[in-house]
Amino acid sequence: MFEKWFNERWFLRIVAVLLAVMLYLMVAGTNSTVKSDAASLLPIAGQGSAKFDVPVSVNYDETQWVAYNIPETVETTVKGPSSSLTMLRLVKDFGLSIDLTGLDPGYHRVRLSADGFGKDVEVTPKQETIEVFLDKKVTKEVPVQVALLNKNKIAEGYVVGEAQPTQQTVSVTGGAEKLQAITAIQVPIDVTGRAETFTESFNVKATDANGNAISATYDPEQLEVTVPVYKESKTVPINVETKDAVKKGYKVVKIVPVITEARLYGTKEELSRIGSVSTEAVSLKGLTKTVDRTVKLIEPDNVTAMEPTSITVSIVVEKENAEATTETVEDRAEKTISGIPVTLNGFDESKYTVDYEQTIDLVVRGSEADLASIDATDIKAVIDVTGLKEGTHGLPISYQTSKAFDVLRPDHMDITLKAVPRTSVQAN
Image (tube, rainbow, N blue to C red; front, side, top):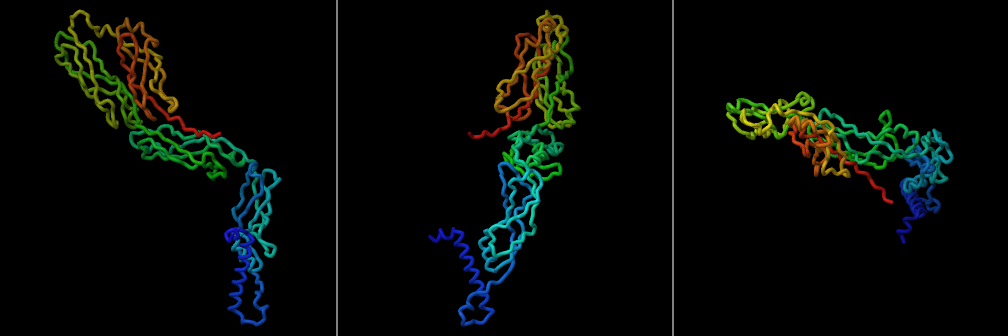
């Protein structure tokens, strides 16, 4: 039963008054002599004043309007009986309010009203009126823009890809005039020293042209942004170098590298200066038959890595006057076939988007007769991306055809996978 009383406002008011009377009696008893008259036991109500930080409430339709420039509290001076002031301190059942009902959009100077102080006190707010800006409430879809800072300070030999926020837009709710200043949600991310893909979370906020935060509500209130970071790379053709000579009476028909391109890693500036790589010189000394040789590639200066570091080279040798069991160099020609479509195997479009050259120009070598009849419809280029994660990958190209020719280049291609942004699904 007592717990129920303590929850009642009238009970708290009575307790506050009794405490105030008891405090007054204790103070009065120390400063006056005891009188026999019973009336002397009743305290004479003293006057006083006190200052309070009083909360401000606003009366308006919050589903249709947004009010700006409303202070949370206003310093207020209250004068009156000491007992009433004591009760106010204990109960704090008072406030200031403004009424915006029926006002049009724009600036309005509105008078503060005092509530719950009691009729026996004088209430004087530090400011009697407040200039309020009333605006029509709207919701706006705003795009998210990620600004990558210090891209030139990323870890040596790495490059940053396109940032991927979890949502491409944010729902912003606020005053129509204020929201006109919002064209995008800016998310700055510093990539200094980064050497791997990373994800960061951010509290969503919008600012005006002066960089001041705009009062609004955001859905979602937080965003996650994934920034792909991968090694800077470039593919270049491989030149096979030779030395010495085959045995007298023999000749080299062709030299065919199994892999015709190498991938180099380094800074963009250094890679731009490199057009090809060469092998160490392959010795042909004393050869009388076709052989396969493994030879190292010479890594250019100022690159951080190279793949592969060595390749296998087939050296086709035959007798000079032998009957033509093998095509001679003079019989073979090179041809560029343009517009060959590239097909991806193992690509999951529900998880990634992909960026790559959808058609390529293929340089082949073969007999003039065979090459004359070959076009793009005779060749299919296939790249396997099964199981690959986000980022840029240098992948081998396999060719499917019924024609006879050797592929000179390209044998690799850059494929960039980007994660599809996650979107929230609203429950019905």
